[in-house]
Image (cartoon, rainbow, N blue to C red):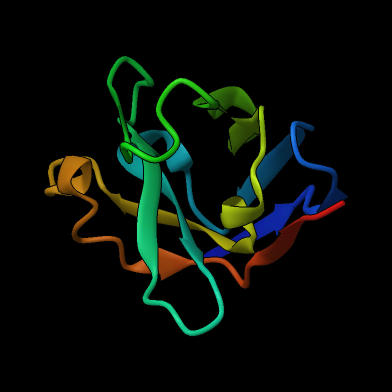
Length: 124
């Protein structure tokens, strides 16, 4: 059974940092691009960042560019999202997802395996 499990969310003050992790089980992440998405209350889900199967190529939403960094460790079947300089508008449930390596993942499309999400709250 393919499964993605996120962790690392929590409550942080504005300007703070969090590191999200996403561990895959039931399949080898090597052949998949991975992405982080988020959904705030009352808003549609949006793509935050994505990374190629090898880790050599990444993409970021304009709202997080320069503050967030996506990375992966295929040996650990894990994808990370380092979030710095967090803002209240970053508050959302963050989801990890995987897409076939040869899909349109860089446009935040074709993600068909999803985790259950982890809550990130940025508030003073």
